[in-house]
Length: 595
Image 1: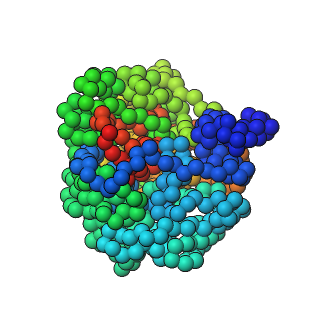
Image 2 (image 1 turned 30 degrees about the vertical axis):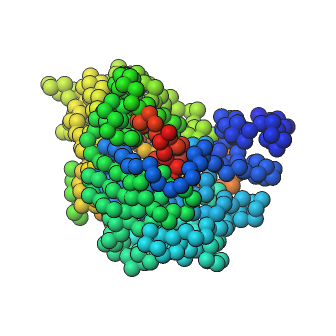
Image 3 (image 1 turned 30 degrees about the horizontal axis):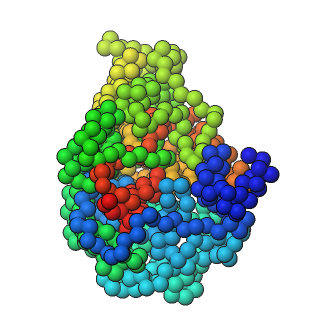
């Protein structure tokens, strides 16, 4: 789209001949992110219509119970410690951010009174500051007022290394957060910040100062409210049994009129994805089931009952295999997979290259995921302007054998390759669910043909994705050679690509809250990431992220398996979810209702 065509399209939006949504979708298809497209309209003084739900209730409550099923059960309720989606979603029942991301990637005000823009004077053109104006008359569930002091505190709390929060990098580049008055704060960045909406938005929900101020820093995990939340959300805390169930009831003082619709909410955890899908689509026991990672043919059969439907939406989710760059079998200073070690087998690039050639992505997509995913050679796939065109994937057993032969890995009498007394035996772990176990089996079968022995390990999902620093079976400990799961690279890659920078290495010192779980270290990657943090030229910034992706793939740090859609199961009468691939399942919970 050339400059004149772009100007004509903006003019059509101004005059109403073209909808804002159609414009944004059109330019994002050409490689721009939705926020950038929205920024073009803002710069042209095209007013942004707020996202308005079609549901217009006349009173709060009266909808009875809402029963939802997360087969990965939550284990804590503090958004700052939520390493897995299950904990992020459970926390979002109670806690809210200043703004959320809708399905098109637009910012939607939640605790904020509106969205900052250059045009309205609340966003610095140079990206060095932003003013957030807060809604008035918002109260915490215990009746205390929500004010600018809470926002300032959340920065202080999250940016403190001793707190060991998972979103610390979202706050580190903030120089200060100034309280302008009770209902406005000014966030000043240390450098120009292209991703200025990272802090306080999406998964970065706000917690109350009056309950957490005594637990900032080293005492952060001791706060009673980590398990008994007091938020501003549409539902109030009733009960929580970690690894089992969350119960909540309607918030009579919620800041949005006549919401929520349901009187109570029950978030049940446990089981598996197939039983969760069946509980909605076939038996009707639950209203919604999250992340139904189930073979597509099973879902099609379950939908025939007419009690529910499958919901799918675009995401940046990537099902991938990680290579451990440290030794998971050697203990150093009380921890395995220590950054003081190197992996005895995977440190050989030829071994990683061979495993990459032995992942049959096409079979995984065709036999397991169907309409729920597509094959990809990239870790970073969305938004499209950041997707590399340089990488290719290949499934080739013969070539894998050639790579290992050339690197000196010889087959023994039992067919397993060895070199210098080291045998190619690996433990390959993932969370328990049928598609992942079937994917493991496909990879194991191919590896056997190349003289690689794979021991398959499956961990209960609620344990694998737990935030518990004492549990050695969590994915962040990575006490295995290879592991597989799905992660999101988010609305802006600054967050998702942070998973591979040196300063995010996971380990005992940060209670395994560091986001670099592979423990890979690369100076070029670190340098590119730091440059992208403050690069205001969108073309240069996109090129940096594309190069970062290419480094990950060329060095076989990760092996992309499939690029997944979000998939859930909803009761036939459930409405208003507006499920977004850029935010929590519950970002729009206040508007969930039944027809």
